[in-house]
Length: 137
Image 1 (cartoon, rainbow, N blue to C red):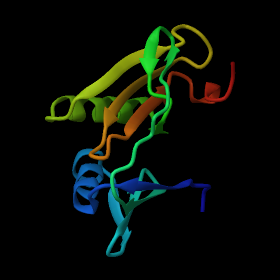
Image 2: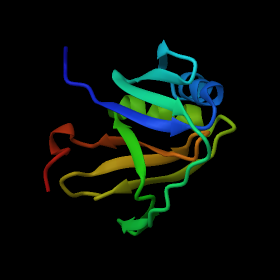
Image 3: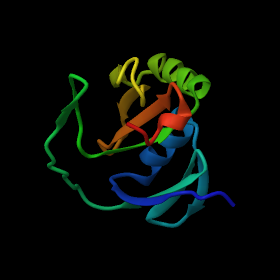
């Protein structure tokens, strides 16, 4: 087994969250319980646990001249997969929050876009021009 990450997050509605990640993002259903669901998000396990209203009041930050959410999570995919995701989500009734290229013509250059899920989480999709530069500066 390759290394995968696991993340657990609160959610407001199991059904809305499950539908968003499976129908819109292309994840698949994992284990489920009465108040939780596991989503296979590109081979990574994200568990959503139903809770009451929550609030993450974190300041935003500026990177590459763009205002970005400090609280977000995301997935890094190959350029071809990124283009398909971006096109599919752009053509849906979902709103792409930010789409840009960061570090243009530099090591670490990558395309990125953000989209909100039903819980107001910002989900980032990122694709590096050269995947070998993911951790280099």
